[in-house]
Length: 261
Image 1 (cartoon, rainbow, N blue to C red):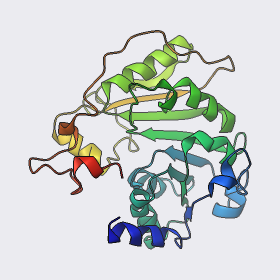
Image 2 (cartoon, rainbow, N blue to C red; image 1 turned 135 degrees about the vertical axis):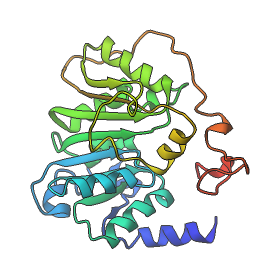
Image 3 (cartoon, rainbow, N blue to C red; image 1 turned 60 degrees about the horizontal axis):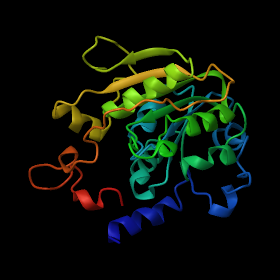
């Protein structure tokens, strides 16, 4: 493991806005902060917005700057990536930002019913071969329903045609209506200061001509969720050209093989 990654892990242990539950604290049990994020972390009663798969934390931090009257939690399992956003938020004194390092599958161990007001899912792996791992699949939507307030919004931003089409089919199958749905976010004329936030990788994809897709919806049903019975054409998400520059490296200097480390 590279020295700089070890240094990041060490700093993550002491950053005041980072929470890293041990497996025993969230597996089939309730994390001590469950139901207490406002009272014990943010010390206010503002709405809590959760970004799932926050990566480097750029989106979480920028949202927090735009909305100081809301609290934001970035969730990811990759600590070395999350360090960037956590460090930035701490240095800028953003008291409405926290980062939670854990698996999204354990969401209901960390958050109480109706504790979350809104969810962002920004550029997740589309998991084209594993529906159970898709963050907009019925398994995860069922988890979100356990922690979201009624009629809370869920936002998906993706450059994956597969995930966009799949999510649209999930909504259609389960009779849920999308409030906003577009295959070309920056080319459709839709204006929203939140959607104008661009992550590092999003800028890279846009520079290569990829179109960003966006869906905003709510889980306005209590009925059992059903997976769509449809074949969706896979895209090139896993191809090396997605990340590599002409020198064979990804935009952050990593090789394709170690990008997910």
